[in-house]
Structures are given as C-alpha cells and as structure tokens.
Length: 414
Image (cartoon, rainbow, N blue to C red; front, side, top):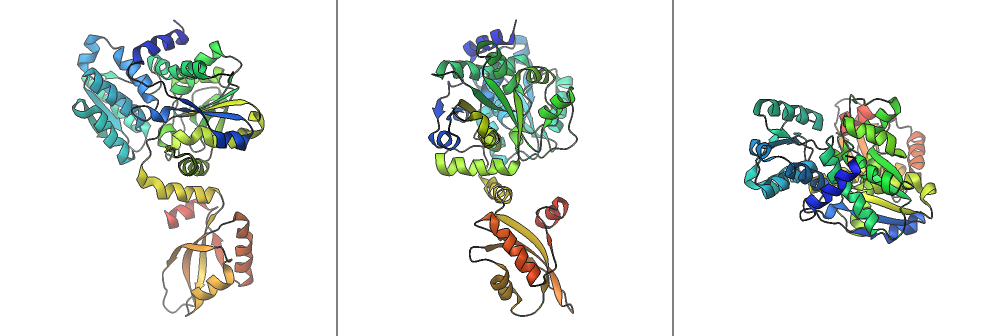
C-alpha cells in the first residue's frame, strides 16, 4: 500500500480528534512579498502543534495486545504532547523521555494532556540522547515505541495536512514551505502532493544550526551531525529518519537553512503584528520567505505554522538573538580608562544620539590606568555601527569586537 493510501486511512482515524485547521491568507505577508501567502494554522490544534495527527494515528492503530504493554516515546516537546493526549483519550499508559533542556512549559503541558496515563522522564541534553534512553526501556519492558517521525503511520498522520490544504485551496498551490526536524511532516505532506498536485514545489526549511536533512541529501546518504544548535528545539535533530530521508530526497524541490536570529525576528513580528504565538519551529517557514522572495512573487504560497508551544521565559533570549541578527546590538571588549568622568566621556564621545548602552560589565583593577570593560550597545539603525567604530579609533580606544568572535562572545556574555 502506498503512503498516500495510508494518509487517506489516517484521515478517517483522526477526524474526531485532530482539528481540520484553517488555511488563512495573511495580508501583511502577501503585500510584502507581492504574492498570495497563506498560513496553515497547525498551532491551533488541541496540543498546539501538528504532532497530534501522527501520534494518534499510530497509537490508535496498535493491536489490543500492544496497547496493554503501554507505549514509550522520545520528544523535545510537541510529539510528547501528541502522545500524551492520545494515550489519555485511549486509556493507554505512556512513558515519555524528554531532553533535560526541554522548556518547562512543554513538560508541564505533557503532564496536563496525559494526566495519570503519562510518566515524564528527563534524560540527556538532546533529542537523540533522550531517544537512546527510550529505546533502551522498550527493550527491557517490551513496550511499543512511538517514533516521532520515522514511522509510516506517523508520517501518514502528518500527511493529512496535505489533504486539507488541497481541499481548502481555491487555487493551485505553487509553493509549499514545510519545516523539517526529523522529516515526518515533510515526508507525509510531500508524498501526497507528489501524487495529487505534482506541480507544487515543496520547500523544506531547517534551522541553520541543525541542517541534518540538507546535509544528508547533499552527501547522498543519511548522515549524523556531530554538533547542533538546540535553540529551535522542535526542529533540531542530529539525524533524520531513514524512511523520511529516502522520501524527502526524492520529493523536495529545495531545502532552505534559516539563521536562528532570523527565526527570532519572525517570532517577534508574528506576535506583534498578527497576535500569533509561534514557537521557533513554528516560525521557520515564514522566516524562509525572505530567502525565496524572487521565486514566489505573484505565486500562491502556503507556509505551515507547525506549533505555538513557546516558553515565555525564552522571550529575552529571542529578543537578544533577533537584535544580534538584525545588526542592532553589538558587544565590545574595551580597555577602559580608570579615572573619574571616563564613562561620561564615553557616552558623549563614542555613542550617537540614538544609541543606548544595554550591557556594561566592569571590573576595576588597582594600580592600572585601564581596566577591561564589556559593553553592549543597542542601535536604532544598523548603519550606525561604523560611526561607533570610527569614534573608538579616533579616541584611541583599544577594543575587540565580540559579535564576530563566537567563542569569546559566549564566554563573556553567556
């Protein structure tokens, strides 16, 4: 049976559980990109992400004997919530492994959706480490492992999004942007479009710090990344699925890598302009539009907003990453004069009228003319950076620009 047939079956299984989410035209994005841009609002699912589709389709398909053994899964958050929701509804016990780095908001939501049917265990710093622990438990307990992406029934569940898109679109879809973590969504959706709308170009989107699918496709073999940036926790894995890799390498038109800072800018914009609370993985596809603006002009474009499980405690980090990416915040390590009035002179002589000191760390050194200072300067216009550097040189400040020195920046700023 082809995956498309399994998607049709999945639609019947999940129709009373997962919502048929709206496809909404976004006027601001449409005007900006001179295109018809629509958002598929999977953030409006009961568990606030599309993961409910695949998780429920897989679990409800288990035999009665398998259900009595209970299920196990590993997840950075959204798949765990889908599994928890499904297990509570179906009265099945679940053990859910999540990375220690998972935002507390997500672990709380898992317990909320699963109630007494779910035990959450935090293990490892990444999805891959939590996955290893989950697989080990399955070997010992004979429980059924519910893979977050590399499973045909999970892919089929995610693929039901494509059926809804084709049903709801009044015009043919020219470009469809889908986020990629392990590849389950991209594999399921692209398999449907390949058969039912082959003219649609499917563009996968990964965070720049975790390009596991793009890297694997370029190499021609599924490859494990040695190190990843875990910021986009819903789409950051070191290795994509074996099945999803085989499907995506044949079905995707392209894969775009989006810098984490650009994703943060998009998160803030969606909140401020659209009242959409997108998590980093949920903002991926919209952040990618800038990198495809020439190709999508005049076209019908759909972006899957995959989830809204954002942790409010991450807001300051999101703002910081956005400002750094946009060139509006800059850090310097300076040799600063140790005398009265030096700071006032710095403000008057170095900063422009619209610049602001957002960070200042100073340790006084006795019996020295200068001491080390780390200063963060926030700009209103990124072009003003050249004026600050010119002033520093004119006033004979010895300094290091920290933004471009990742190791030193991380050590001094955190």
